[in-house]
Length: 176
Image (cartoon, rainbow, N blue to C red; front, side):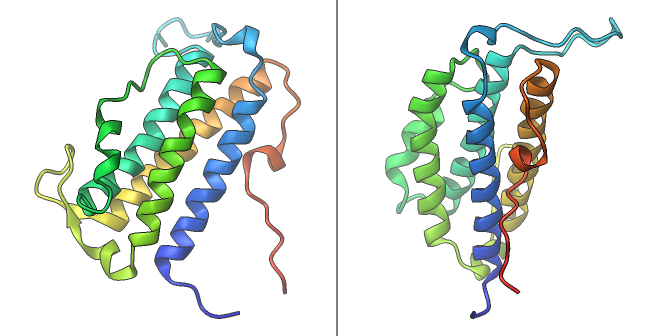
C-alpha cells in the first residue's frame, strides 16, 4: 500500500464522519422531529429540537462547501447556489435526504481538487477575513460536524433508539 497524502487522509476522515452522520439521520423517528431534551437546569435555553439538529447538520456540510468554493471558485462555480440555501432551520428527514447529496458532491469535488500544498494556502472566510489555511478551515469544519453528529447520537440515545459506538464512529478494520 502506497503512502497517502494528508489531503487524502483528511478526505477519508470527513467521508467517514459524513457516512456515520447519514446513518444516524436514518435512525431519526419521523414522528419525533419536534422532540428535544428537557434539561434539568432551566438556565439552559439553547436546547433545540431534532428537526433543528438536522438543519444544523446541513450547515455543517455547507461549511466544507464554502471553504472549497473559496479555494476553487472557478472550478466549483456551480456550487455558488449553496450560499443561498437555507440551513439552521427545522428540517424533516426527507428534506435532509434530498439536500445532502448536493453538499456531498461539493465536498467530493473539493477534495478531488485539493492537494497537500493547497492545505497550507490561506483562504479568506467570514470568520477570518485576512485568511486562514485551508487545512485549518477543513479541520474546523470536521470538528463542527463531529460535535453535531454526537449531538444527534445523544438525542437518539435519550429517545431510546438503540445506538452504540459502531453507529457513531467509522470503525473500518485496517489490514495489518
